[in-house]
Amino acid sequence: MIELGANRYGKAAIRLVRVARGADGDRLRDLTVAIALEGAFEAAHTDGDNTLVIATDTMKNTAYAFAKDHLDGPIEAYGQALAAHFLEAPQVDVATVNIRAHHWSAIDVAGTPASDAFVRGGEGTRLATVTARRGATAIEALVVMKTTRSAFSGFPRDGYTTLPETDDRLMATRITAVWRYGSSGLDFDAEFEAVRATLLEVFADHDSPSVQTSIWIMARAILERHEEVEEVRMVLPNLHHWLVDLAPFGLVNDREIYTPTSEPHGLIEATVRRGEG
Image (cartoon, rainbow, N blue to C red; front, side, top):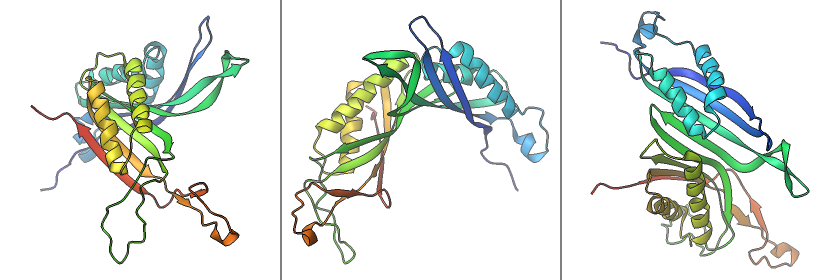
């Protein structure tokens, strides 16, 4: 017997910019949206029957239309509205909406934020994923570095090991942190900023014996401080910085001059969640 397995379809890379105009100045929202549906779509695959297939162009148009009335608040609320809309179709079992919010900030003009001029910021990309009525949010591409209090030692050595042990190194990474909320009725903007603040504070303030331990310390702090968060998944590439040998020039390099590399790099991932009981 040959049968169709798990499947879904949708519209990806929907680019959307919304300018909310107000007396105190404009607010700019720059989004990339993806919508995916799962449900009773077997006939489209096996029989060429499109009777129940919602056109992906319709998904795109719906994303634009919903931005008018549902994008005044958090991007999670916008995603929830879109997901709920598509779930109204009886053939849809699961609707997933993924939203990337690209950061822009008002340009500073003599100490005052401009009301209608913006610069693309380096704050990272905020991500919200809503599956049906369950939401998740993330910080993506937040580049951070510790210039001390980062170590890596005690690892196995064999004939192929050349990495020296160290108790003080640079640790640079590009954090992808995804956390899942236990409730959908939250102030998502406030929650996002609070969890982000915890993440950065703990990253800056802890001693790191390894990237693995750093993930555990940061994720555990988020769960301990924010009871509305059920689970944290973190991905940290180890963006190496190697000490430059200045001896040929008669100079001593006392942890001052480094050469950064992006490839190859270590990649460490882990999920930390609340246990049962």
